[in-house]
Length: 289
Image 1 (spheres, rainbow, N blue to C red):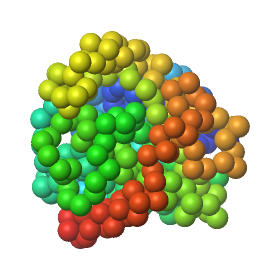
Image 2 (cartoon, rainbow, N blue to C red):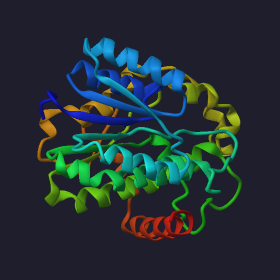
Image 3 (tube, rainbow, N blue to C red):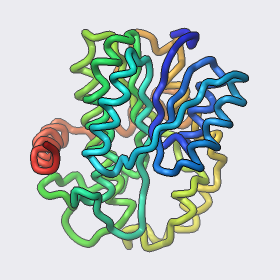
Image 4 (cartoon, rainbow, N blue to C red):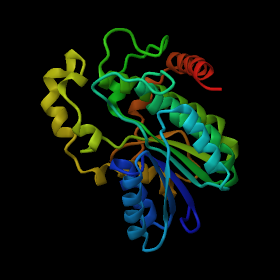
């Protein structure tokens, strides 16, 4: 995939790993639209993108991606702009306290799973028109802490941010593999990218309460892990987005080193995949129109 004339969309692209991914794409010749909520951060992101590209390559679109209605509207707006060659679903996060989206959905589920699901569906026509194209869904090793139970919006028991995010990321990884299989005939490749831990703004807000009690003895080790440079963490999504060696491939997880790593796929059992399909359809039916 050559970058000349290629268009990319990066969600959560005004800071952290998303911004570093957008800057890396721009430096490689891409035109990049970043999506975020804050106009000032958006302007700053576009300035960095343009500087990396040495031309006007950046564009900012404001949207609250925790709101599924706004996400759907964003997707339709972007789809109207014509063929798209890359979608990086980077938006997501992990929070100490439970919160709910405007539609009343637990926040981790809304932002880490349902929002990228809705946006991708709206953009499939544009991505198919731009084929060969790619979808990169940012995943997380937080999946290790997930309860793979998909009966209600929340998992059973008390809320712990790491486990909640891990469960939402597990759901989206299962969906990513389904999507890869579904899109094989279309020329749209689908990858998951695990960037590893990094010193993002989101990580800076974490406290020990985000961990289930069994993991709290490892708090200092976890804090050390999230001290890694954000620019380093962009390696996985950038590789998934641009590596010519991935042409013709789909359904892979690209790990922090930029190599394919199937370890997280071990959590996507047939039972989990079936449960996620039913659970996701139920949530979307209840909260979208």
